[in-house]
Length: 440
Image: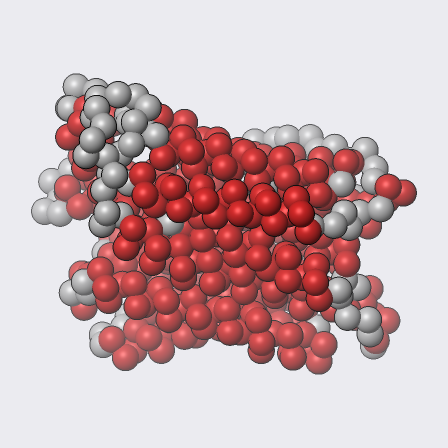
């Protein structure tokens, strides 16, 4: 079995890692962002009216103000993910036509522009515009996933996808940590606070994110090779649809639609868990921000270790389809252990199970999509796959938040466990990839 080129995989890892660090830097400062812009613009502003609607949604809950903060972060995160849903297939199809390298450079340049907008977001609408640009340009992960598909064989594809998964896991560890620390240092003291384009209290995290994006662009421009030869470039197009079931009809390959439905159900439940986890920890175990940070670092390192090490040894022996099924099956008890945890030790046991299960399922599902898709449609198939994943990450936090506050802290995890049964059943019915048939 031929191993994929190590230098290209290293570049893939660095591009994905730097992209996710920059993307996740904003996570810890969502609540403070709201407080800053609301105080700056007042209750009669567009933001103030939005806050009034969210408070009405919270009703008479004793923690209504906290709920509004949660929903604000969920709305911004969901808008970004929804734009990923719309645009990831566009960049994937474009990379099939013109190549991976120019598509990657274009989306990286757009990412820089989004961070610069956040840096100078003196008013709330500028921040929203910057997030819109960032969401539209979020095609980097789907493009480097297509690169992995270009340089790997079906038999070792999950190893390459594991590299992307490890980069994403580590990015989610370092990004929030950098964002939380850098937000303690304000750069806006000498600026006119009412100006639309001015430094804000969170400009330093934005500067760091923009610097990382610039470094990413320079790295890709200087070192990233083109992995899609001209003879394999087609004219793939995708017919957009508001119906997720019809989203993948542009990819003529059995198995792609089914594995994408599996991923959609899994990620919707998983993102609802991710979004509500800190609130469960605060409510049940009185976690402080430092405790929550340690919790996410633990989960991130578990995911990175499994995807970067354990998965690479297990994939050749068991195959991607069996590992995906095993990962999904493990998530069902993991959701229940976390949801019903009565001690911190039990919580961490559930989180370890959750991290292990998701670390198996995520890269193997990506590998299966690329194994089912024809060579000339790799970028489109993976772009559509990432797009549907982004839609699930837009829906999950809103659904999880509403379940949490309407029915209590256990409900997102109980519903999540029940939800995972559906993608698990679909995964069991997945067709065997050609690589498994060849070695059978």
